[in-house]
Length: 398
Image (cartoon, rainbow, N blue to C red; front, side, top):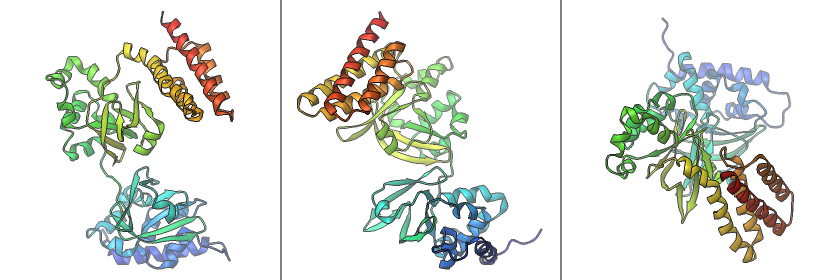
């Protein structure tokens, strides 16, 4: 067994090979260097260059892109605990190294003027980098941006003073380590869902805290944890899980999300508070290797079959109650937007209770409204379709 080289020797050796391969691949007389060539030429990214070589990511970052790279300097890598770089550069740790490096890369060319407007950016590894401005300095997770907008032929580089590390725990482990989800973890174990939540995913979990479970009527949790009530417990827990990695900004923009239980949850800001059904969002965007967790203050319960059947009717009633006053007050565009959102939500529901002809009529109305430039006509087209849909569901229910 040979000795592992020191960090410095290893980085220098890999960088020499790396730089040689870059110079051979670079087109003669190119006006602007790509991301990899720019990093090598800068001279302050030797460790990053060695890591990219070891992770076989050189070719990817020389691709068309564009990419935005938050590039740690050699000093940034030196801040890591002793032995970390050597460990990451070992062949058996290649996937972990890839995960770390791709966490520093965002798809697209995002200049500093755009970065400061963001609260987060999705990295190539799937997780989200948190972005905020503190005392006039831009922070990406715990790192400070030292220099911005280094232009490359296939993207842009922003220099950071620390290596930022992606989440390394799966969803159940993340919940356990947080310490305030003991009841949720116990419930997932009783329901036999831990392995599923630890799987490849990705999944989004609206996670009730221990305090949220404590708000349930006395004896509810104990009852749900009994073996004979496993099916009910599974349904409740699946109602808190959504397929995919859905961050808070995307969830709020969508307004709803279909859960693994089958029924959707509504996601909206009410009176300045972000809500999932009747639960307040206490914290959002907690990354895990296989998904993301949003913390809620209330256990949300899936609707009964009777409630689910009544839901489309209530959606239409609510839309008209909100839209009609807007139209009468001279805001047809706002009214049309309310009606359009409701119509599309109805069409996306599996059990909307509409006949095939009613579905077709609603789809036609949505298409006509989308291709119409007159907001008055849009509003009336959608209103007539919603009225017709409402009557159709009433007849079907009889």
